[in-house]
Length: 144
Image 1 (tube, rainbow, N blue to C red):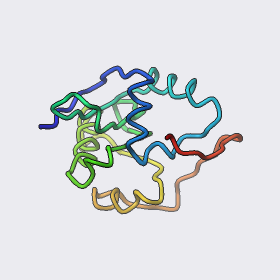
Image 2: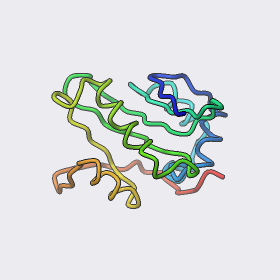
Image 3: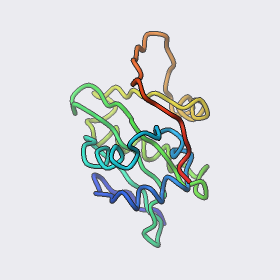
C-alpha cells in the first residue's frame, strides 16, 4: 500500500538516499550539492511525498506556487523499483489539487528529455513561449 503526504519534512540523508534510487538524481548540479539540497528541502512552497508500507520514501513532487494562479514543478521523482505504477501521475495530480485545483492552477515545469512523454500523457502541452536563463555554474553529475 502506498501512502501520500503533504509538506512532509525530509532530511538531507533521506532525500539523498531516495535520489540514488531515482533518475531525479541526475538533474542537480554538482556545485555545493549538499548545501543546495538542504535549501531546497527547507524552501519549497509545497511537497507531496509517497511512501511504501515499510515507510520507505518512494516518490516526491516539489513545487513553488502562489496558490492562486501558478505552480512550478521543480522536482518529480519515483523510485525505479516503483515506476510504471501511476505514482508519478498521482503525485502531480495531488500537488495541483493542494495548490488550488485544476480549475485555478496552471502547472509549469522544465522537463528532462526522458520525462517529456510522461508529461504529455498527463495532459501537459509543449510550447515555444517558455523563456529561462540557466545559472552560470552547472556541472552535471549523477547521485550515486
